[in-house]
Length: 114
Length: 114
Image (cartoon, rainbow over all chains, first blue to last red; front, side, top):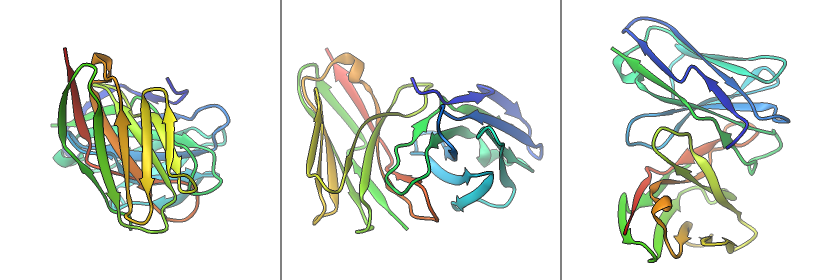
């Protein structure tokens, strides 16, 4: 098991609502990435946070936003939820240093949008 | 950006047999290739990775080979056991800014039967 933790484990929301997911990185890791994993698919990169700033973004709309705190933990916020946002949301932590850093994933938050 | 293709999508082997999963990538600049195992209800777990300065890496029953010329890499599991049953994902770096982000394949569901 990695030291990456996520909360909550499961969440049910209705269309149009807003949601906040949380992630605590592994000890010693200063970079957090968020991924969306739809059922039966591989994880897709949403964005990454390093030194409390967004450091790269995938093909996701602005209603997906995030924060990183001084202790390196992070939040993913999704506004105006749509049915297609139903997925497993994963965070991964690493130490920033280049393109070959190993990423360690948390257990994920299962979001269901009704 | 990087594009990763993974085959097969499902693989059924008998206990004790070998399993091979193959991936191809598109960006010749990619230099780091991890493999993750994902069990039901859990986040992806790193099982092995390889960097582009080596052609093969082995860890007990698991090995990964890399052919940079052909831009493909493979996961080999020998002497499979029922606990190897899971979904396996390959990945390659996604270059947006600094620090590692990953593009994942679509996954291979491995079933090891008794």
